[in-house]
Amino acid sequence: MEAQVLDSADSEIGLSFMETDIATLYIIQHELLKNPDVEFAGVIVKHPLTNECRMRVSSKSDPARNIADAAEAAIQAASEMRDALSTDVRV
Image 1 (cartoon, one colour):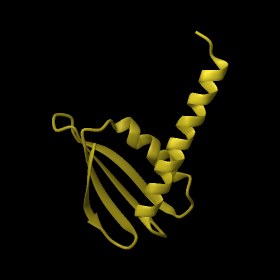
Image 2 (cartoon, helix red, strand yellow):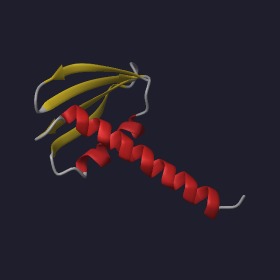
Image 3 (spheres, rainbow, N blue to C red):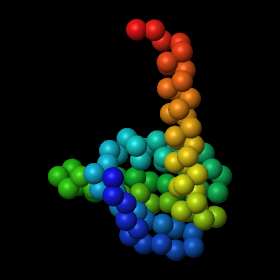
């Protein structure tokens, strides 16, 4: 995955992601929207043939920090799910 900052301001940031799956960004968006400081978090596929996704986040606090925190929360949730599945599900 390659990430690039498209534009940045005190309360808003726009990012471009290459070679990623939109589902990953949807999980981060879900975690972002749980934060009361986040006013808007959106993700789109820019164009299916270019494999580029974009994210825009508006926040009352630092949007870059909000994205990092949301990514950490998503990683933690995935780890908890992995642990639950490995102990509760037998193949």
